[in-house]
Amino acid sequence: MNKKNRMACSGTNKASLVKNIGGYDRWLLMSATALIIIGILMVASASMEIAEKTYHNNLHFFYRQLGFGFFGFLAAIIALRIKMEWWLKASPYLLLATYLMLIVVLIPGIGRQINGSRRWLGLAGFGGQVSELAKVFWVLFLAGFLQRRQKEIIQSPYGLLKPMVLLSGIVLLLLLEPDFGAAVVLISVTLGLLFIAGVPLRYYAMLFAAVFFAVVALAFASPYRLERLTAFLNPWANQFGSGYQLTQSLIAFGRGGWFGLGLGDSVQKLFYLPEAHTDFLFAVLAEELGFIGVVVVMMLFVILLFRVLRTSYHALIQKLHYPAYCAAGLGLCLAFEASINIGVNTGVLPTKGLALPFISYGGSSLMVNCLVIAILLRADFETRKQKRRR
Image (cartoon, rainbow, N blue to C red; front, side, top):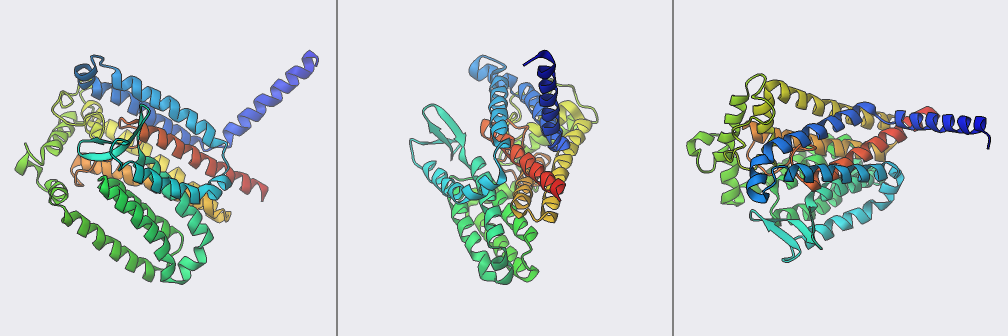
């Protein structure tokens, strides 16, 4: 091949690459990337003291989070090449994998118990929180179920029993860990997807009422869970007991003011605020970056959610039901997790152990959320491709 032909081929390959990159939702990609970068920086800032005390390396958690981000990026690259049709065909097996993971994690010696909860799977030196992947697999399965059984679900209330029975099994396994927060997210996402799928309001109202009373009953069934759920109403009444985490979190928000104390200058992270680099990282962010930093992070989440719902809407118009339901379900999952975490940090919601997507420290959460973004980008890509064909 002569030089001229090689240059022509090179130019064609570059043009093809640019065209492929341009086929994805850049706003979704940029907002998710920005959240990941902010998260890695905040993990480094919030974890230095505890990392130095525990591992004698103040950047221990930073390096790990950076590594999780790298593996999440690799997983996303692979997932971007997987067609939505493949996820649809594999969805029954993903449901089976969900049940197997949630059962195996309860087995002593395989499931690792941390802080009284057996949520982490430990095999051959590797571990992960199985509920993170279970949430994604359930959404991918439910989206396929809604596409295949849409008429049945719309025409009869009995059509709702099948997905709710399957969900009940997953929720029960989550409560055995226990992981009440993940169970609430899964229930909320399921109700949201059923509403989007067009379930008649009379059926939906009955289902919503049944689920609401079931969740309330579960909350009141455990004295420990009830105490945690009610402590947020007046955390100062027991500020050194059940309200300790929330009071320290609120102090962090108060110290942050408009512009914050500066990156790395948080006082609350100095062993005052438990789980400062995980569940309560948003409070440290508020203390160091202030109200402005909080608004920026929340706006990034709003942009991400808007783009996801936009993808779902356009997919529905193109009659691509599976990508539409997947996008809506995964977007709702991210939205509920972010809302609950921010609500817990600000004292609006009861204290629950849910990470802030893309930001809180945790390999399972970060890598799975990178996978989620890849699936969302793929759903948007196929929707645009279908639109161009028409």
